[in-house]
Length: 171
Ligand SMILES: [Zn+2]
Image: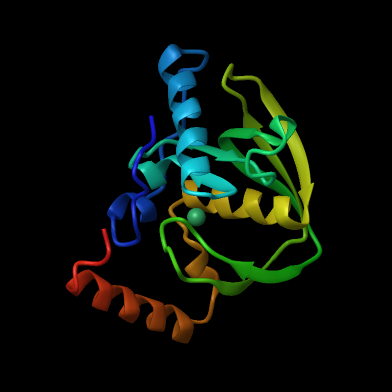
């Protein structure tokens, strides 16, 4: 099923999500399937469970946007264990639609996480994938990309969102 995306302003987006301890369950498999479906429907390259209102440490990524099944990534309880270099690029978030800002992040990261069966694994990504790994891991710790931009730009975005909320144009 396709979940609606929770927008900025909902507390679940700024709370640290709970670690998942039950693996290999039909519920978890269904949730993962629904998250991919919701992410593709929203045309995103990554989606974290808090963005569908589920406060659990689960995120999905597909930088091929559904073109290549081999690029589907499921991250459970992820932690970044190595960072290298730097990249600056435009970043957006499904929970802050229409906004984009340049964000500087590590250019290469290694993430340690569990898969749907509870098996621990490590993966390393560069460029866009590294950006997605950092963005989604941040989400599970209650951090949004606007925490990585200047306070001035952040306040501007918040003010614009408040206007949209007042106008009833921000779900
Ligand atoms: Zn996001």
